[in-house]
Each structure stands twice: as structure tokens, then as C-alpha cells.
Image 1 (cartoon, rainbow, N blue to C red):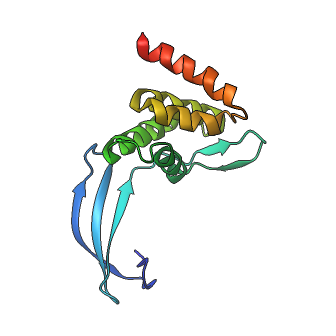
Image 2 (image 1 turned 90 degrees about the vertical axis):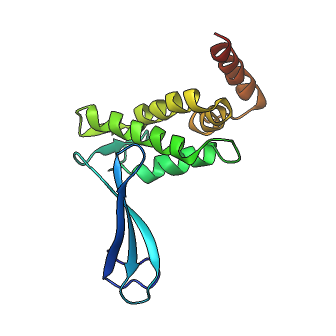
Length: 153
């Protein structure tokens, strides 16, 4: 594994353990050159999945994009990092078990929306505002009223 600090090609594993949800192995490593320590995660990848974007372009599925989006939606909210990781792992599992080698970005976005709806209503609205491209305050009002209706039922 290449060191992220000095780019040296050799590192030594100092500690390995499963993550809380048992979907990955967390490894603490130490660079053989500069001595820096860093963490890597090893995850199972069932097969390569292509995401079909709304403009028709295609790119490989990238878990980190979902992680970044969800983390941004949950920013400054009292949402535990482990719950975010479980949500992202759940979405990844759903995508992988669909059985298709291509998945639309719309389908992935809806999976994330459903996960955020159950996780935190403010994060859900934040994500929806970008995902659904809210352009005016009344878009927020209309969407927020549906969130209120869901949380009251």
C-alpha cells in the first residue's frame, strides 16, 4: 500500500479489525520509509457496477461519492459517523444486489434519500434540495411539509 504522505510503496500492517457493521476490515499501517501511520479499509466488491448519469454518461460506482454527499447533508447535525457508514454500506449493498451491471444515478439517489429520511429529517431535506434541484424557497416549503407529514404519521 502506497504511503499517502511520502508515496513510498511499502507499508506494514500494524493492526487489523472488522468495522462495527462487519462490512470492511480496518487496517492500521505504518510506512517503511517515513514512519507515518495511516488507516485503510478493505471492502468486498462483488462486481464492477456502472452508474448511468442523467445526461447519459457512464462512470464506475464510487462509494466515496455517496459518503461525501451524506456527510455533507449531515454536517453540523448530531448524527454519529457509524450511522452514516451504515447508511452508505446499506446503499452500496442495495446497488450490488440489484443484479444489474448498470444502475441509474436516479435509483441511487432515491436509495440515499430513503436512508436519510430515516436517519435525520434535516439531512434529508438538505440532500433533497441538491438532488431535486430546489430553486426557490417554496420548493423547500413544499418538500418540508411532506417531511412533516411523514414524521407525524
